[in-house]
Image (cartoon, rainbow, N blue to C red; front, side, top):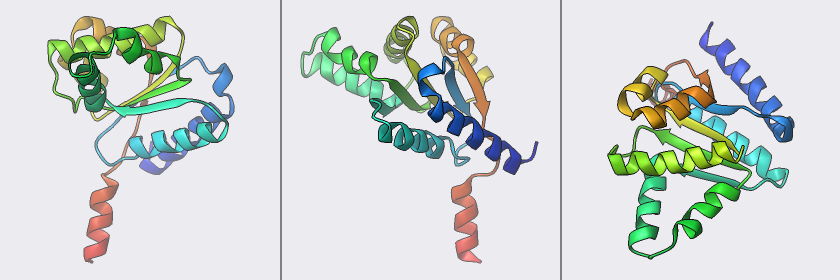
Length: 171
């Protein structure tokens, strides 16, 4: 498939996703190299669903892990206080999975959030520059199994749009 037809197909899928949000059961995993529109598409979904009154939490994987750690240790919040907003929102978008410092601790935090939402049948979108294979390689079995086993993968194809725009600006 061409990059253009891939982008159009993803756009159509996302419009349907937003129109039928109540009835959608799929958890989505956006994969692809940097600059191909994963974060842009996530932001479009945020805008559309926010207009419809849905509660959305949008956070990078790195910020999510750092925020949980900060709230636990510096602010001395309880697990309930920390996880509740992440569990009660209609949609949780975790952007840039794989860019966070991967440690046993960070994987445990990500696992807790993802597993809790899956058990509560709450919707999620995760975006990553990593392929499904790389996710299986980099993350422990519990976390990678949740992501690879419960999420529908949507591969984003193409060249980094930021680099293409920079090239056009120079010519």
